[in-house]
Length: 126
Image (cartoon, rainbow, N blue to C red; front, side):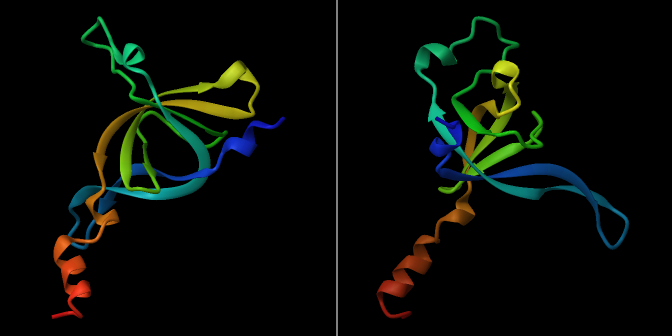
């Protein structure tokens, strides 16, 4: 049975890129958005523990098709949650799907309407 049957969740891969503005200054922005399907699952507390302070822990694991994902990327789920990619493994070296260890970072506030907008719509825009 193919693993892809379980890839029912949608995600976006974002990559940090350096951009140049009109006056020649540089800045960084999350661009190069790639949409894909996969399966995200939280890890249990015992897998999140680390005895070494240098080790980056993972809070979630993502299963997805083989894509261009690197550890400096971030993954955004359909609810607006943002995860940093901390590790990538080609599961069983078969080239069929990737297992990515993720660290929950933050929630994208732009994914949800502002409280003022919700209140205005309920009151007929007044």
